[in-house]
Image (cartoon, rainbow, N blue to C red; front, side, top):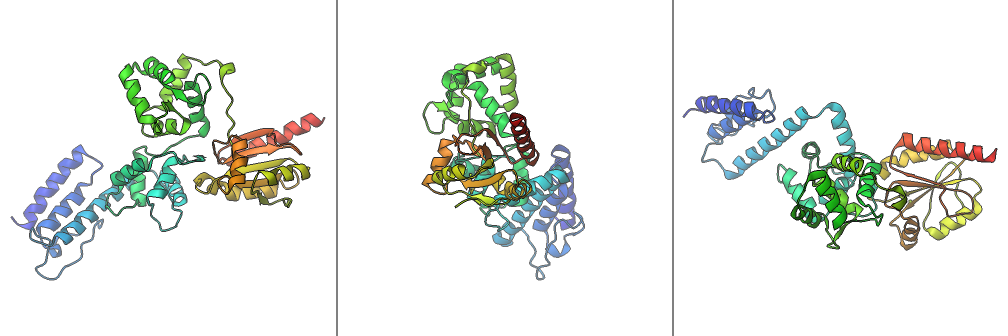
Length: 394
């Protein structure tokens, strides 16, 4: 059949597919099929409005059925990539894309404009406002996600592939407080874990699940096989959509917990410090010394090198240090730097980053703590602390 006849049939097919699958641009299907059926020199380049440009090959060397498999694969790969780009562009607003670009760039640690498996793991383990202090997503799961969304098969994730990943709800969203509230609500005895009985209470009451379904969910979430779900494993279940956060909140409304039986969870934030600057602390012994010497209240930020929200908040923290230089001393520690910083972090029972602690002179006892890379919340908590201090001194 002639190339024009092929083009007519495939265009019709593309239109039919487009009616059923509006996210697939039929014009790309038409152009791809036409290019495979005829020399590239006669493929109409206006079919997709210039989306896909075809190079003119030497005479008689179009991509017919007998053409080089390599050239066929190159075209197929290009079409797949263009389809992914078009889907992403059409499905996200400019505001969404701007926010996703910020998260993507923050995750791209080596700055090569692509995400490798380790960088992808980092962004999957964080929301837009917090990271836990340890890796919690198994590498095997990261690799499965990489294979699923690596459209062109180059072993890395580009921005358009990242947009598709985000639109499929693969990224954690929201505030740490929401996840902690849901977790603590299910953890009825305040042990810091959700056991089989507590999971059963949620699933049977809220979902009408069977005992077999409860056991299956526990097995899926219990990655270290200790017969209980810790907070990191709980996040994994939410990220995989095995547990719905809003459904948990509905369950908690049905079965309000007794607050006096809950253990309070402390969330951690990282020679003498210089006022107006962010001063690095390299261990608990140094922190104790600073507390004994500095008269102004001290705020300590605990961060981790892999924490994207920590990096995003760094410049803002520096601006706060300059703005409050007469009232507060600003410190920062990287929790994984050495054994002494690990001891400092452990003594504060930190569970996420960035987190912040305010201390008064002489005592390693925080008088206030908060968490998350939110500039407005940070400012509000600082001002609240100052107002409380003024009220106490009257």
